Length: 157
Image 1 (cartoon, helix red, strand yellow):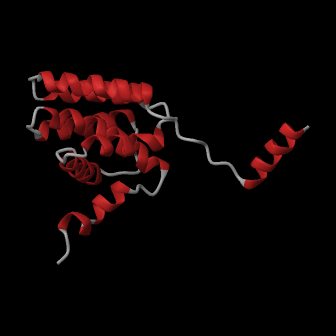
Image 2 (tube, rainbow, N blue to C red; image 1 turned 180 degrees about the vertical axis):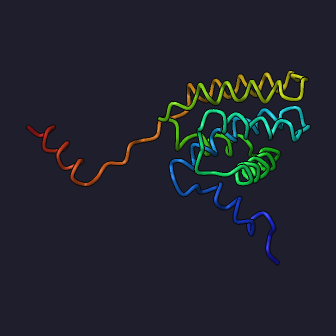
């Protein structure tokens, strides 16, 4: 018997985004989804606000609205699991060196206000995102073998 969560290709793709652009889009979506699930009522207007924000800023032109919507729904569902903190951290870590934090903070605030009821738990989720964007371990740049050799030679001299 196949587990439905693991057979959905959208969730598999989100869990292991294939490119930096996909990872950046997932980071933005997770910021909005975290705030949306904080009050235990995910409203369609909150998902729409995430998509609208990303579109207005041209932050993920390679993804259509349907894909962003599916990504939001899948991540929002994962954030309702007990290991939600790991989901957030694992989604944000690969893009920690990208300048996305201001976008994530603005997006999270817009999602909180989207349903015209800013719940105290949504405020806490925004504070958590702010802390994570400041404290998340930075991704280590991947260098070619040639770059490593050149650095080694430079330090030996």
